[in-house]
Length: 186
Image (cartoon, rainbow, N blue to C red; front, side):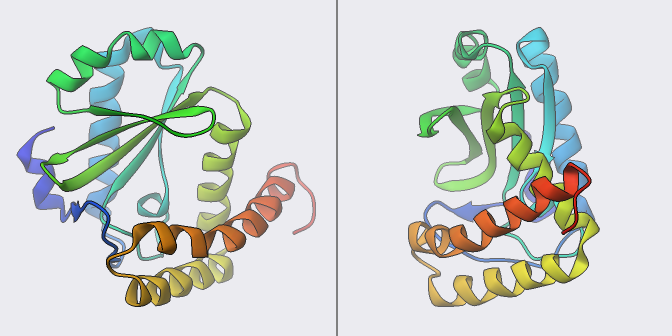
């Protein structure tokens, strides 16, 4: 990835936690990275979306851009690992069931997480549903932001605990987001 992305206030030491107020530069960095990935992956990517907290306009986030790459076959993306690595997308393996992780950054400073998931799968839909729900439900977005700020202050050097402590809140909000997406009451 280009060093210009560093100027967007991106990057966090691997394994650490720090959150910052939302920056419109994150939106631009997400679009730029998605376009770069699409050019590299071609038809191997059915869709690429900016996800995660940096894609939610009103909340704080770790300054790491998350993208979901929707694929129809993992082999098509995995066959491009060498090309992706040459462009700064380092393969990290299967971080969660049903997906693969790539990271970008400079050494141990991580600026991007790229999640390759099956297009239209539960994982894909969860990423988009949560992002869209939080962008449309300010009270829930602010509750999540407050939780993230509190946990970042409590666990600045422990990303695993920080992430684990958010999981119950995320599961509950994903249920609301799915119902909202289907047009049900929230």
